[in-house]
Image (cartoon, rainbow, N blue to C red; front, side, top):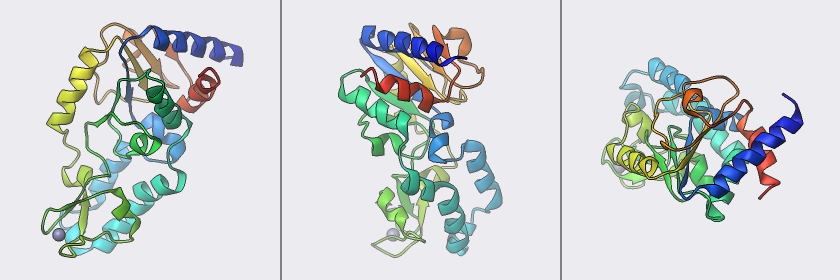
Length: 232
Ligand SMILES: [Zn+2]
């Protein structure tokens, strides 16, 4: 696809955003690829490697692997172009909220304030002894521990075995019902509700959202949002 056609598509996308009263965004692993965050398949592999007792008995093994795969890229690369432009859209009043299956917390770090992480995120970490909860900054330690009782911390998505959070799903369903435009970005369809009026799908490859989409952009999200940023 030529560059001019990408530009034309992004122009059309921006017009749809401007025309919408309640634009929403649904993101999946695809948006975080350029921040070097692995997708859920990788997360599942991490679960596969560890017995449920590994965290308790060998916190060093668990945390060195978890740091390498998930935590280090968050602090090293941070939010990418797509995350940052979505934050700008919210600041400009063009985004009601983001529903995400990502656990990386990068939308929040970028500055979005209404994010629904239906599989929880790495900003919630439980002490396996006393249950106290600590935010993502505690994960900078090699083996994050509770400041209260020195127990090892367990990241919420791991702790819950990536079960969905009912409250976040309820909020997500509500915002989607009320939305007249959903921009789907790099989603694998683990969460599938969108606006029932208009849908834009950004994904390099065909996926389950194509059929209901008014506009399909077969590009990386960073390519699309680099273009969009110039129009804001
Ligand atoms: Zn504790």
